[in-house]
Amino acid sequence: MENAHYEFAIVGGGPAGSACANALLLEGASSVLLVDRARFPRDKICGDGIGPGVIAILDALELGHILDGHRRVTQMVMTSPLGGRMTLNDNQIKNQSPLGYVIRRTEFDHALVNAAVHRGCADMTGWNLETVARADDRWRLDLTNSQNGEPCSVTADVLIGADGATSRVRRLLGQPFNHEKHVSVSMRILARTQPTFPARQELNVEEKLPIPGYAWNFATGSGTVNVGFICDTLTYKAHGRHLREILTTYKGLLPDTLAYDETTRHSQILPLASQMPPLAYPKVSAALIGDAASMINPLTGEGIFYGMEAGLKLGRGLASAEKTQEARARALVTYEREFRRTFTGHFRGNYYLRKLIEKPALFDRMLRAGSRNTDLCCDCIEYMMGNESGVGKKPLYELALRTMLA
Ligand SMILES: Cc1cc2nc3c(=O)[nH]c(=O)nc-3n(C[C@H](O)[C@H](O)[C@H](O)COP(=O)(O)OP(=O)(O)OC[C@H]3O[C@@H](n4cnc5c(N)ncnc54)[C@H](O)[C@@H]3O)c2cc1C
Image 1 (cartoon, helix red, strand yellow):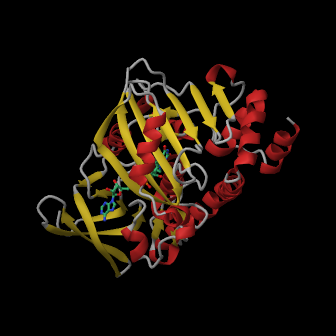
Image 2 (cartoon, helix red, strand yellow):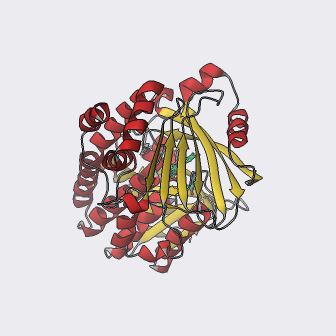
């Protein structure tokens, strides 16, 4: 493996990196390396909510079978601290559905990595990226084996950073971490429940919690419930309470039939898309995708769909470019332009919506209006979560107007 050379080196085998690897290989690239410090299956601290837009991405990657055997979410519930409650059941949806899946990341991410490896990706899971350097129009990646510390170096023409919320590749490309105004903090725990508990997602903005933010309980439909809490960093710091305490309070509000597994209680930060770094680095043949590029919805905290969409767009573009630095540079620029064209308005709208929702009276009004009008309910959820073909196109002012008139 020493001195091996690849056209594309992807650091990070989460949904963004493995979607990119699959897209590259599907479009004919033959020399793709996937590096991850973890060996799969590995857990990832997450709500496990797989947005509806992921369905189309998996189809595009010819990996729709990954969803086989998982139950689609049948109900989404949102509650406000003032008592408002909005419920969307799948049988009320007329058009594109804004409901997705809840799937354990141990399973979902493993399936994506496996697919890439079966397609011919060089597998360096279990290797940690230490540093990168660029010389003679190539990247050199210095890696160490996560188990025994053994060092190894490989080279690549193009470097793709998909190494998550605390991305080392991002730092090595000279990009600072998000300002704390654009970072959320979060904690989650897993619980067992009766397998007959349906696949559903519930989001609660709850006044009984010690600090403002939102809590969730997401059920897979096959016996696991993911329970968690998220808030912005500045609020968290100002209140000086521990995330564990908030989660304990929330658990007290949920049915006592949930059997929690305390070994799964972990916290993590979320860099929000309200402050994304440059995505493409055409002069040095590099790109960032997923959490490494802060592609997390500033309202919902979701990032799987955006990271996979970025991986798909980037992989397709690079695979179809000629094998010259100039052609790849053009593909990188196109990737950034297309991603921003598709998502900038969506992220900005969700950032504004979050500011509105921080005012309990407005959020309560939205939920009460949505509970009286199923189309509005569906459109509000679609605005936040997207739908089966990506992100919704309705402008925020239209939703605001309909909320006021409902
Ligand atoms: C508590 C919480 C709840 C969330 N809930 C949801 C949800 O319900 N739905 C949703 O869509 N999103 C959710 N998110 C966000 C979601 O988890 C991320 O957006 C998503 O995982 C991003 O995928 P990724 O591939 O960019 O990064 P990751 O999934 O983080 O993958 C990055 C990979 O890089 C590897 N890596 C890191 N550093 C190195 C290194 N130096 N060398 C080698 N490998 C490295 C890691 O091992 C990891 O496997 C949540 C996040 C949190 C924290």
